[in-house]
Image (cartoon, rainbow, N blue to C red; front, side, top):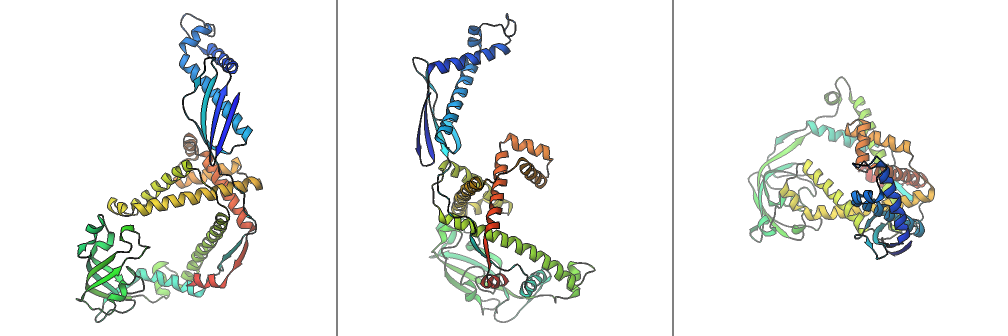
Length: 442
């Protein structure tokens, strides 16, 4: 058998030539196997002549023959060249020579090759996991806002108050949506829009222009849309907002005491509420710290190594991400018009996320191989059980569903990646910083 492998980046072209004698031998074995099972009228089972079998099952025999020969050749090429194959496909139909030798070409998508950076004892910084008095106080204040009352105010708008406004917008005298040719979301205009008088509420610079106004006041506010605005076609545009103050209100928060606690926890007092809130904050902070460690570790690894990704795999991951993001947006109440408005941003985010996920995955798999980290069958089954519970499906039925769609190996990879991340976190050098603690408290 003559096999030539031409590797280029994340692709390998595999040219295969299988000699006629090997083709004939494999064909003979297949014909014999068909003969044993064939039930042809006029012949006892297993007694039909080979020529009859070949004529009757010509297409099936040819398909089985080519599948076996090509699979064996590709397996040999992968083993010989030590290829890390992600998937492989036959480029075109096999060709038989005059002597019945078989020629075929296959294209394999390969995992990227790279040298691992240093990955043990990576330095990470996290805030303290203690819950400060300020954090507890802020959480209780947020809870109290559920029971807040709003009363009308008179006079000029002040910090912390709310303005209820009607407004329209234009760019050089033309409606914003006419200029950009699609929906501008809330920027296009609203009636009864609530705006809190605090920094960067609504749009940067907007609140500064309405502070001090009173009910009934009208004003045209020119604003330049910054480069971080979600709608790309509005970035850098100068938009005029024609606003009218319809109402002004002040938020009245309830006093945080035993009576307030009883509204949230019947028959309980403030101390009980503080204890419960502290526990919830502790869980949230612990998860956030754990996520921070992983983010910093993966950022350091990604920054330390560079390699190209297989475009075919990137596109598949991108499409999955895009579908998921669109579904989440629709579930959150976004309509088709709003989706179209943010189409470019969603697609860019889906592509970036796909590349980051795949790059991290390849690095983690390589670390797992070096450290001999494996995902056992028991661990995979346990994970599938958790997934079935989350999907509210019977475990056996869910397992068969994964098997049918070929997703078992995806679950195994997920377990493997998780164990590798745990390994990296356990070996990391963690420093608790005062600066991060203060930021978390704020």
